[in-house]
Picture 1 (cartoon, helix red, strand yellow):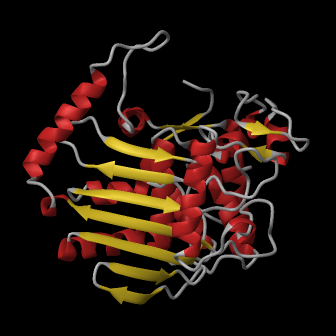
Picture 2: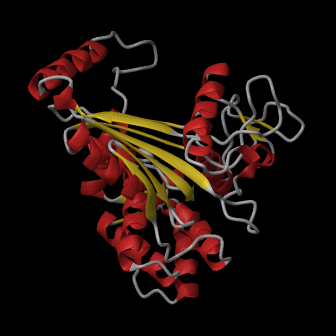
Length: 350
């Protein structure tokens, strides 16, 4: 296991909620943000975990995120709705939007909710699993501030715009796709920079447009799209749905989470829930998922691999380990959180 400080997930969740409450959020909203962050840490997605608390607090303190938003559905028409997030915390808006999509899917077979004027909302699988836990298929997209070059370019004009999908299964093996449209989530480069580690070539270009393995140089440069033109196209699609369609910002219009403490992000999300029973008998669907997953896992492992895993399976295994063994935070992140708690006068500890 990587060096670091092992913490109890429940204690970490309580700590994160206390920090966000001290920063001005309502306790119920702080609990959603905290749950999303610890969910990510528990799945070994530390790039979207409690390491984000410091920047969330800084943006709240700078007046760039509304701690007490009056979120409202400005459009509602059958299966579709549009949530105005009032510049509130992204996790709160995205969770409310997926809850509405699920409600609409129960009534109409499918539900879609776009989110306007939102902020960074963390790991997208958190929202698609809200749907799969209720026997539905969930889809979720978000756009983000520009850190990625388009295919064939060297300047940042796109976010790493994540996409997630989740479907229910019968057994312990899940189906949860959660991917940045860049070669890797930018948070992983941030974590590498904090720990002084190098990054694989192909993740990013430096400020001169050259491939780099230096995490600090990558943060000053640009991310690269996953799969070249394919990741580029998917990132642009996320801007269409989460920005243009939702009436939120797109591309360079979105305020940078870390690098611009002068303007709000104004990002958007797009949530979809699909009621399986409107398309297939639920048990027949689960039978089909069993066959599909069995077929995937029956593939002979390639050189360097011990088995084939289904999208979401590595994270689900990590989640089970974290529940029993705790979550390991890097020393630097642990110290940063301790300093943050002391500054805010938070009594909770981890």
